[in-house]
Amino acid sequence: VSGRYADIGQMSTDRWRRMAEAMQELGVVKDTARLSGLLYTEHELPDNQLRRMRNYVLLGALAGLLLLGLLMFFNMSLREAVRFRTTELTELNQRLSGQLEKNRLVLAELEENRRGYAEAQRIAKVGNWAYDCDTGGLDWSEEVFRIYGLDPGLTPSLADALEVTHEEDRSLLRQALRDAIRDGRAGSIVRRIHYSDGSIG
Image (cartoon, rainbow, N blue to C red; front, side):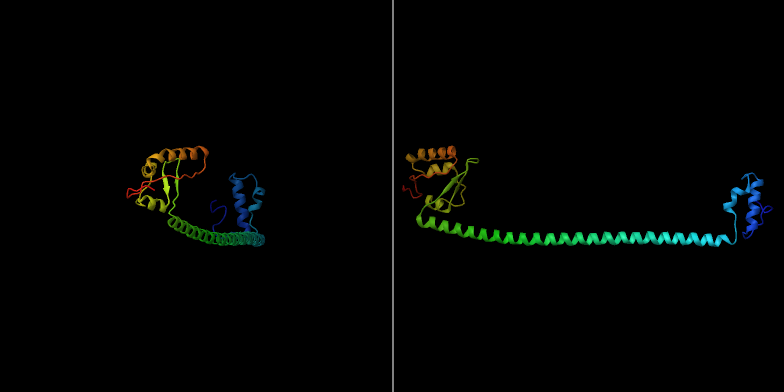
């Protein structure tokens, strides 16, 4: 809008009116009534502006309070969840500590029993062994190695057991193994053996 329609400078009610009329003359609007919302009134603008500013401040404050309330609720919920989980983990830790102590005592008792069993076998000069059907391996007690006069570091096999068994008793050992595998339970046999010094017992 050129200066002939509205002087350049500060805005006033008269100036708003002249601008509206100039827009109508230029054909931008059909009548000035359409620009009534744009008309500047010196007495209304500060109140409208103040009212709008109050509304924006109020809405901003309400939004801020709502956000603060949500953050506080989330914080309280999170603290409660952490407290609950911490209590849970503390109780679990105590139970696990108790179970570990029980396991330690059981293992100590088993080791004591194993030592007592090995000592009883040594005194009685009796040993025991087990055959693993899946691997074909043998597990000998310490006393079996001593009785046979063999190195305890040896990994025994069925061939080793047959070799130290008297020739006439080898078929008895084989049959006892077949029976144990078939029946699925341990057996017991008495057989003669060849000692490392060449004697038979």
